[in-house]
View 1 (spheres, helix red, strand yellow):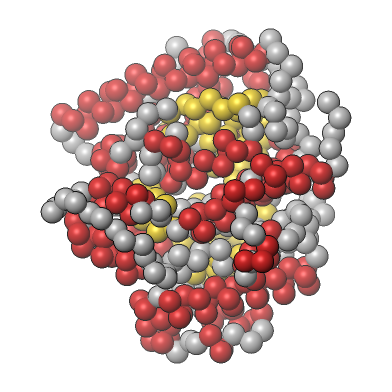
View 2 (cartoon, rainbow, N blue to C red; view 1 turned 180 degrees about the horizontal axis):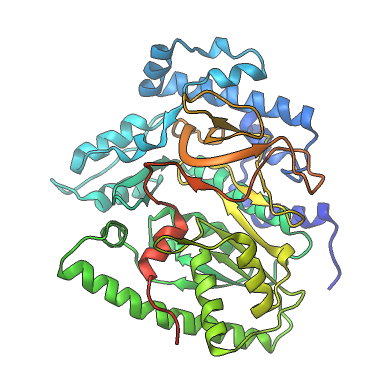
Length: 457
C-alpha cells in the first residue's frame, strides 16, 4: 500500500474525526490552538507560545466569568484576568489540587457539587430517585448531554470530572491526533485493533470512555472488556474491600482474565495468517499478560513491520512491582516482533485533556504545547526550571466546562526539548511516579485490579 504524505495522512484523520471538529467560524483561541496545527508536536516555538498564551488566557477569563466557585478562588488569591499580559503571567493562575475532584458528597448533594464546579449553564437535569446513588447521578447528567466520567484510586474514592460535549470532543480529538501523528507512517486507517480497556459505550469509567475515538480512527475494533462496568464494581476492586461480595467479584475477575488472555491470543493467531496491520491500544498490564502467557508456553508471533502498541495508564504489574517501558518494548519485540519504535506510551489523566505521547526515536513524553502548559512544582508548589524533579501541574485551555488549572499527584522531570528527536517542544522523562502519600491510580491500575490473577498456564 502506498504511503501517504504526513499532510495527507493527517487530513484523512480530520475527515474521520469531523464530528469532533466545530465549524471554523465558531473557533475561539482554544480551538485555533488545537485544530490549526497539522502536527501538534512540530509547531515552531514562537508560534506555539502565542497560541498557548491566547488559549489559556481565554480559558482563564471564561472560568472567571462563568464559574462562581473558581472566581471566588481567584479573588482570594488576588488574581484577575487583567493580570495576564504576557506568557510569564500564566504562572500566576491559581491551581486546584487534584484531590479536590474526589472530595464530593453523595446523593443529591453530589449533584449539587457537580453543578457548582461546572463552568457555564447546565442543561436541565432530571434525577427521579429521592436518594440517588453515585452512578444514578452521573447517568442523569449524561442523559442531559454531558459526559461525566470518573476514575478511582486505591482509596476507593472516585475522581469525578464534568465535561460538556465541547470539552469531551476536544479531548478525544487531541488524544487521537497526538497518538497518530507520532506513529506516522505505521498507523493505517484500515488496520485491525484490539482495545484493552472497557467498552466506552458501556461505562462511565474514564479508562473506557476516553477510548471512544479509537472506533472512529480505524475500521475494525475488538474490545477486551465488553460488558457493563459499574462504579460499585470499580470501588470494590480498587479499595480491597473484605466480605463475600468483593471476594466473589475478584474470583470472577480472575476467571475472566484467563478467558480474556486466551481470546487475545486467538485473535493474534487469526491475524498472523493475514497481511493486515494490527494495533493494541490500552492498559500495559493486559498486553504484558499476553506476553507473559506466550513466554510461559514457549510461543510467539511474527508481526514484523505490521504491528504496534499504544499503552496508557501506568506500569504496575503486581503489588510492589513495576515494569519499565524499555523492558516492555523488549518483550514485545521478542514475542510479537513489534518494532520498539512503534510501542509508544501515552501519559494523561482524568482531570486533563493534554496527552503526552512518546516519540518513536527516544520514547520521551512530548507535551502538547499549543494549548496546554506543563509545569513542575517544588515542595512549596512554586514552578521549577527545566531538569528538576517535582510535582506535575498543568494549565489546560481545552477544559472549558471545569477549571483545568490543576496540581497532580505525579512526580516528573521536564526537559526543554527532547534529547533524541528534533521536535521542538518540551518533554517529560518517561518514568513517572506517584508523589509520597498519594494513592495509586490511573486507567491501567483500574484494569490491573479488575483482572489481577496468576495468568500463567
